Image (tube, rainbow, N blue to C red):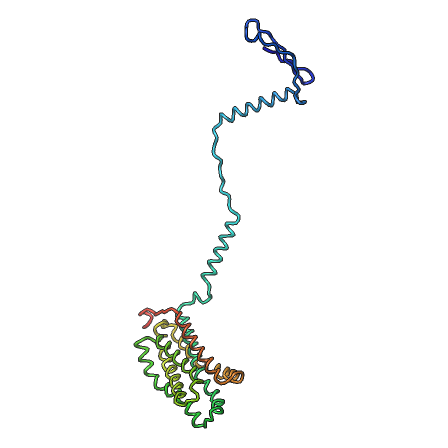
Length: 291
């Protein structure tokens, strides 16, 4: 065995203690040796070691509990939710006319058809002057060309009502607009052939002649009773607007380009209307509203 002795200079040394009664310990002899402690007081090191040992023992006795995860709000979640809500609202309201009732779209499209209708009716009254100079028509021939429109217009009024009752005003209106628009675009191609020119103007009259009865049937099928008077006024008001626009636009178009361009342009307007009208949904009022 050995005895540890602490010196004042923070060194300690060991000296042997011979155990005469123990043969194993008596075989070893320890010589005094000092051990430096790097200038750290022994009392502090012993105290720190003892307190560290106690903490280790206490930690072994206590059971380990799983870490508690607190549900902290994500600062970006609220902004992302608001952004997604805003995007959803924009998608629901785009395009702007998406939430408009179908019956209002149909009435607006029908009124636009009547605007194009009278634009095609009056364009010849402006273009007849350069056409007469180009083809050498007399006043009687020019009058014959202009009056041919009303032949078809007068003959198609009653058949238009009958066809609208059987097939529906919407279908008859579509065919009527396509007929007069296509015939209008044919006028420059048939102007040098008088029978063909007269026939094309008769087709324009037939297409426009079935339109009033077709529009009336369409209003009766799609508009409730309380809104029909306003719908009729709005639709047939397009005729007067079309006459004004046709007489205002035809002269500068003819002066800037030529007389053929006014027929091509107005005819393409009607064909474009026919294509766009196919995308409108159908809506019919109930039997209770029809009466």
